[in-house]
Amino acid sequence: MKDDLKELAKQLGNPEGETGIEVANMMNATNIGMTKHAIESLNLSKNDVVLELGHGNCGHLPFLMNQAENLKYFGLEISELMQQEAIKSNQNYIDNNSTDFRLYNGTEIPFDNESFDKIFTVNTLYFWQNPDLLLNEIYRVLKPNGIFALTFADKSFMEKLPFTPFGFNLYSLKDAEELLQKNQFKILKSISQTEQVFSKTNEMVNRTFFTVLVRK
Image (cartoon, rainbow, N blue to C red):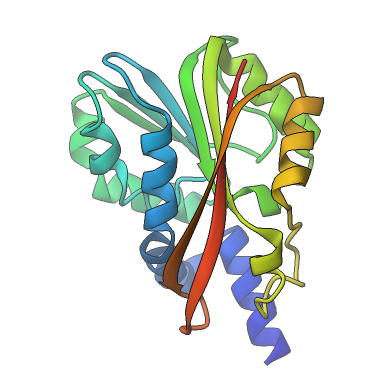
């Protein structure tokens, strides 16, 4: 049982192989509420250039692209499998040059300074190896006055899950706000939501999550 939970935790952080595809489909289903919330909180405008860190299979891309006209989306993943799955299911957006999926090492963002109007990430915070370094990179690639949305599940919810002892760093809202402020960001607002979802171990649970919106 412990080995199964360790394997699930590993796959949630970096999906690989056949199991990785199943885990990614499950993540897309269980995280879609959080992902749509993060996207809507960005209040996307015509011609915005958007970056997402850790897009998974990116089944939410059509939802994002319908938020405004002429959006340009860039996705970064540490998982080669997730990059491939995202490309496979979003080829039409790639063909019309509105979307680009790339790999990165989880810390260094391979784009020029001030490249993006909006940046967001959902349920990746727990796996950040060097939060200060990554937030400095996010700050660097955001345009002046650009917006970053950080969405994550509350520590008090996450610590009840059986797989989070294996490689997850959990955050309360206060922890996340302090981390962002320490790294130059100005907090615009923090939004709390509770939703009913099936957990990764297939039980119906109430999940509280936060989206912290910050400005460069």
